[in-house]
Amino acid sequence: MLELSPAPVTSLYVHVPFCAQKCEYCAFYSEASSGELINRYVNALVRELEIVAADLKPKTIFFGGGTPSLLNLRQWETILRAMEKFNLLGAEEFTIESNPATVSADKSKLLRDFGVNRISMGVQSLDEKLLDRLGRIHSREQVFKSFDTLRAAGFENINLDLMFAIPTQTMEIWRATLNETMAMQSEHLSSYEVIYEDDTPLYEQLKAGEFSVDEELGCAMYEELISAATNGGFHQYEIANFARGELNREKIPARVCQHNVNYWRGGNFYGLGPSATGYVRGVRTKNWSNTPLYCDQLEKGKRAIESSEELPPLRRAGEIAAFGLRMNAGWPFADFKSTTDFDLRNEWDCEMNQLAERGWAMRDAEKFHLTHQGLRFADAAAEMFLR
Image 1 (cartoon, helix red, strand yellow):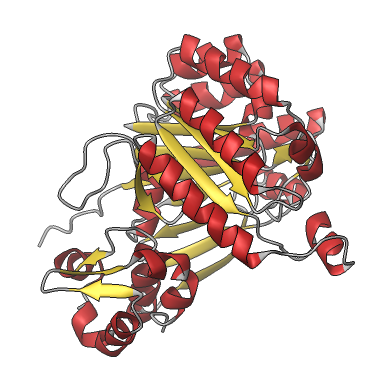
Image 2 (cartoon, rainbow, N blue to C red):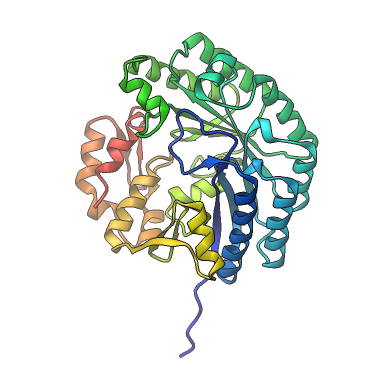
């Protein structure tokens, strides 16, 4: 009998680990940029792309970081020409994260010419003092200027990324930022509450008693975010994500970040670059969180994988259940069954009932989803589904 080869993977994440300087809150793997190491990284990334290219037919591509927009024109051209050579261009959604300080007209044109069609811009705040507090390298003025530059280059799908519950941020400042953001009319909005991660300057300052966390204010700011976004024409489709466009049968708007939806729906994806994780056909991989070591491995002709783990089917299904609950649509039972081969109503009946009784979730004959209150405590709800 003829054995069919598996369908190629349709999602690609690339981690660019360089920043102009490290932000006060950041716990992602990133480092201050150095020209020579960036060139070495670019060459190593091209080798890693070549190794996986035969198993990739990307519908979504996402370059995250770090600050991918920090790469210069020549470095971007090297990566994009390699992707063209390996038949990796032409994705329906090709996103690059950008810092407003590193957007330029010529770089924007180059990216558009090679099929990049979505930019995610890390704004965080439109208040100068708070930008300084977070260690951001851009000014509020650069946000508006860079947004106009991207529009002029032909980008019709832009995400703006904000943070709230920043130390010293008041509700008045937050409202002003939301009002100005709505006026910019982006297609997508992401907004996250500040998380105090170990080994970040912000966490050390909190521990030292330089400021305290106001949980009530954080909750009020989240409600203000949902209200402003909804009034501004956005639809919330995930705890921290809002998009414009028509709603489909699951009430998911057209301008969602398709790449992230693939994560939340348990899809396969390759993860390339230092520290990147991937998930392909039941195996989770993680690359070394060390850029010189990453380069060294690829210069020897092998992938820079630190660890790989084959997840038991039930454990993987539990993770997929947990991730999917981040979305307002939750899980239609039929979709979960076709994704995981498990039935939520068999394996997680008790957990679903507990959450419904608590007022954190709703279930009917077709699906299970978190309520408005439940989404606020989604992490606690998700933990109940892990096996």
